[in-house]
Length: 95
Image (cartoon, rainbow, N blue to C red; front, side, top):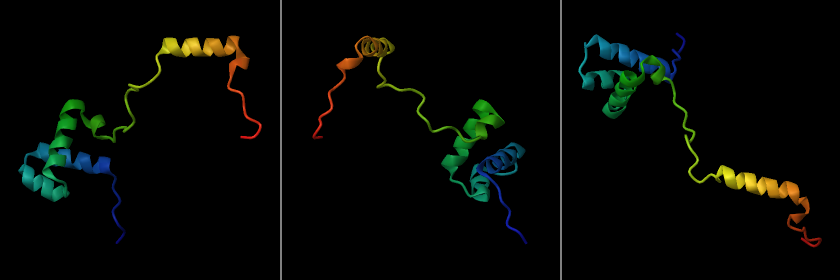
């Protein structure tokens, strides 16, 4: 018999389907799907907030760049480099 291959999204959808059926307590539901109760509650919360699309894997990329250089400063530096291209650091012949 071949192995059944599933992905995390399919497992989350099955978890929500079982939760919506109201046949299991939270403990039984989590035990059946082999997840912790914390993960179970997190999955339900994500479903309540965003429906099925929220069950898909979320990006882990940063949503912002708090240490990014201000746009005005970038414009000043780029403008200065264009006006004075020879102001760059001199390279050392021995380095």
